[in-house]
Image 1 (cartoon, rainbow, N blue to C red):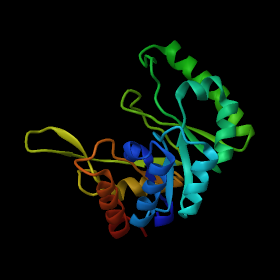
Image 2: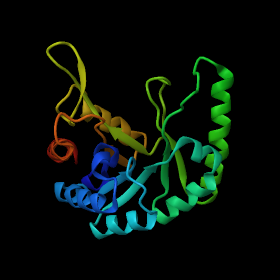
Image 3: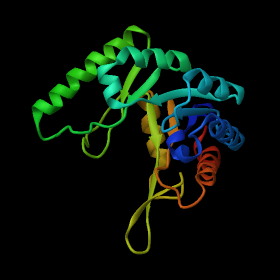
Length: 214
């Protein structure tokens, strides 16, 4: 992994990216930390062309997005247009709401719907990825995007999200396995931060640059 492949997931900074002005200020801070790419997720209703223009102005690559699950399934052509406007080829189906993974017909139906949507993106030279969670809990190989999250446990035994390198995960082994599978982008995301999320993202990129990039 090299630092050019490390991106900031803007969902971490969703409360600071609701308007174009906030988004611009956020990207300036993200770039100053040393990030060179971002994933668009959780930002406000800002036109794609403006999102791209501001990012390019700060020297940031939009490596991927998250799009609403039903939009991906019901309106994949609109996703194609949005990704093209943003200048990126990757998006992720964010969460399988309402899918019962103990019900084979539910799973089969989701697979069929995702295959159909993915075909539309593939025809346009784009890639639909799948953001898995604990409810699927199975190994997924060959996905080009990896969210980097750390986890720790406090003195009471309560788990919490931590900055990269501040928790219990073995990131050297994780990165090695991801690289072996062909991962292209390593996207830092922290769902909940103990204080200012900009400080958390800075701690993470500092650790990555000092300990993980080769």
